[in-house]
Amino acid sequence: MKSTNNLQPKEFDDNQPDLGFDDFEKGESFEAGESHSEVDTCPDTDAPLYGDEEDCTDDWKSVDFHAESDGGNTPPTQGPDTASSGEAPESETENQRRTSGEPSTALIKLTSENAEDSEGAETFSSSDFEDPNWISPKYPESLWKSLDGMGQAFCEEWKKDGSAKVTGLNTAFFARLVVLMSNLHQHHGDWYAYSECAGTWHRLDRAELLNVIHRCVMNYGRVSGITEIVKLCSARFCSDVAHFMMPFSGYEDIFDRAPKNVINVQNGTIVIEKDGSIVLHEHSPEFLCRSVINMDYNPAANYSEFVHEVFRDAVSPADQAIIQQYAGQCGLGWNMSQTILIICGNAGTGKSVIVKVIEKVLGRGKYEGLRTNMLDQRFELSRFEGKSLLVASDQYSDALMKKGAHMLKSLTGDDDLTTERKCENDHPIINGEFNVIIVSNSDLPLSIDGDSKAWMRRIRPVNYSGDLPKTIIRRFPNVLLRKYPEQILNWMVDGAAALRGNCDSITPHPEMLRRIDVLIQDSDATYAFVRNCVVRTGNRENVLFSSALFNAFAGSSYFVGSGSKQIIQIKLKKAMKDVHGVNGPSHDVKGSDGKAKYGYVGFRLEEDGPE
Image 1: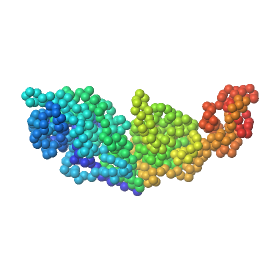
Image 2: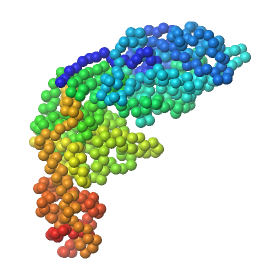
Image 3: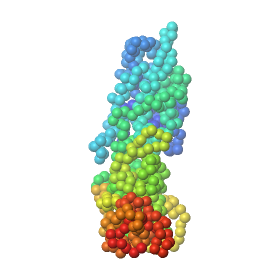
Image 4: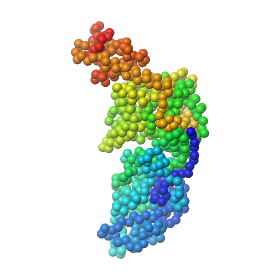
């Protein structure tokens, strides 16, 4: 089932104050209390991140930031409360109102163009998403009220003539105000702000964060009439505010609870339901998307020519369907099927082309190289933070028999993994929901180690066969992306829909099941043989030569008749290490002819084979 529907934008509750990420891109000057004309949104994602100091606002809400005096120099509050009336301040300055005893107020921009018109606008709720723990990224009014407990926003010195001079700013107050005004959320120690132009939550680097803080403080100072704000809002103060900023309770892991059935593209956000139906929504911060595929989605784009050109006759239709579903899963950004795509075949058959196409669709920063021999090293897992796809290209035949290869089950099995960063004391936790693609010219035996069932659930081996292409096209993935951009995206989206319609499972076809069985048997047979037929004697008089070990295995019932001699020897060596704890055969063992040979000292076969 496939349908598309261009819905109206899903707006926030416009009765809530908000000064969003993109509001710093608007460059119209203002004075407190003025009415302002509508400003254009930024035309493209390459627009400057922040405007000049005289930014404008569309709609205003009067919010009381006054903290009652606790015996300081601030006079007691008197007179009408402008915050309760909701009216904009008159032409008198805020400094004059402070002198007269009226409450200190600031004007905060609303996201909508007209708050009254947007009251009935459609908004998202937890029932609209599959995860019942989903929460809206929009901060509720109750959190704005928490500013009352942060104390006075600034320190004042009262002069003899009754006027006040601001001498300092409350760091903790502005730290909370910045998070609320800019609607910032934290993820793994980084702050994110929503960009209306790109339709994504953007990670703020240090300079961007300090600019956001500076903009918020300066805006507060201007609308509050604090002329001293220019001197007080220094780089040191902004840095101190950044150190004080922290997420609100309940919002610490908001991005971990983001909807996982969406693909964010240039012309909207694609939502794929459980039944495989497809709906195109307008961009919305409620989807909590932190990346975007820079292509337009066109459900009418026919991708048959692309499929023929990228796969030719090298891949069977059944394997093509598996690859399409996995590509759709990569578009969704997490491994819902908990599988590993293994692509094997002869050199030059185009195995890497489809992988590079998927990488380029996702964009840089969303995929990372996979080194199976390094997965158990201290800092390796930290490389995967913020990624969704791990790719191991051009792997040797022993890639899945390396010491760290067992970590692939955790990286794809929804396990929580603790990472370690160089020169940092923090140990962020990443979730093992990565998509993993491994490409090799030969079959990849596994380090089973008694866990064959887990590997059977994980691996999805695909074969490339046939003749080499007659014409070699340089940078072929780039050519395909220029030629079939909408077709490729539609192919991936349909793959994701097929995956979701199949209960989030990539079901192997009969031929693939046979490949999995053979691969598991070949990988596990060496372990069974070594466990049952190789005996440790501890006597240095007993020597088991590598050639004798191979011949005994090849002539036993454990050998199913597949795999090259080199691969079998690698697996036997790995089995000897895992079962008996020996780090490979010695290379200087004397044979009966007096020549040095490879062998294991202190071992023998149950029935001694040939030397």
